[in-house]
View 1: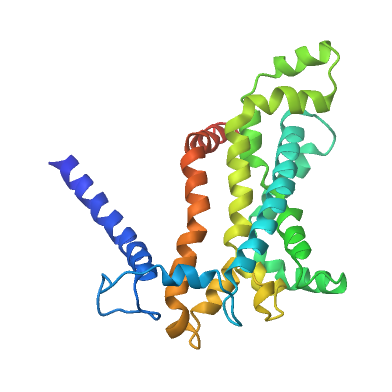
View 2: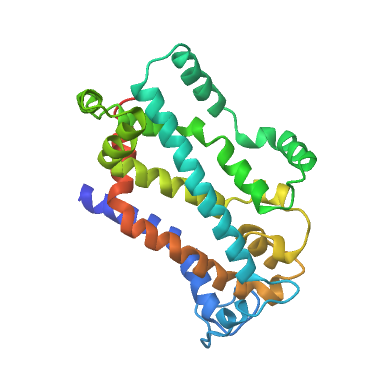
Length: 275
């Protein structure tokens, strides 16, 4: 009986979480352009709103938004993953003066929300001429990625140091040990780092709204673009397009999670064994 109640509660919570998402998906296929809160299922279904996304106008430019976000996410993912893994390797395997102090400083800095430095970041980028540019976004998203090394370090700590020592005996240098021995043995944490590095710029709104402030539709990322579709001026005309765009944006991430789920979970759990 107790197990039945637990499962019933979990089912209820899952339903409450899924119902709004289901309503948005159904709305994206409905004939109404604006939000319709009088019925859950549309009277008729159509693909018109998905087709409209491919034909930009002065308000909606989804193909450009998607391209901008994909470019930023890919470059950020590559740079951030490299920073995180190299920093974690250095903190886990190397012993040098000031190592403990650097680790403690990184942990202390991570206690402060990143948006506390937004104004300083904005003025620095403005002086460098990097506002309203994808380059500025990539720099902001990836510059401090090395501070998030702790989970990867916890995973590297579980790798036997004897493998590294054996490679040194065979004449391998630090780069070869890192790329040919440690990384192949650390696929779960590499996958976890890649997904985490990709998701942050894909979904971020705060920094994107600060840096990409030109107001030009073609300069926006997906988060900024979709937000503009549901403001008080545009929601009655573009809400169904907003829902359709949300469905499209969620597909790559959903597929990536399904494929990489096993490695993602292993990366989280293994990285939490040691700190």
